[in-house]
Length: 77
Image 1 (tube, rainbow, N blue to C red):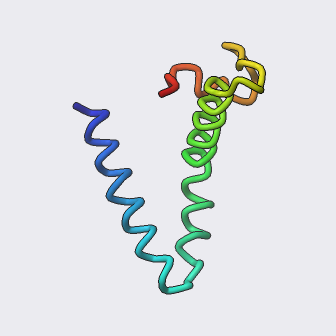
Image 2 (cartoon, helix red, strand yellow):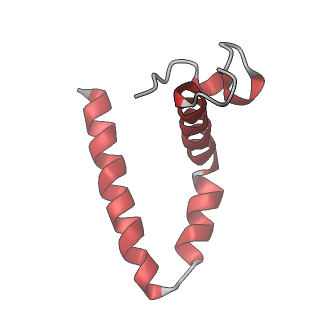
């Protein structure tokens, strides 16, 4: 239930961020990158790990790989 609440909030927030694009005002982007940097890094790590797990060309990520250790519990789709 908590996970579903977080997912809904993140989706709603992303919709709001996408709405901001039309105004060409990058102050919100600056705030997002400054205040959400750890979340953005986590998202990048999880998606990078998922891409590599699903790729037949790259090596599979290891469990304790330094760059994506925070994504260890993220399961690829």
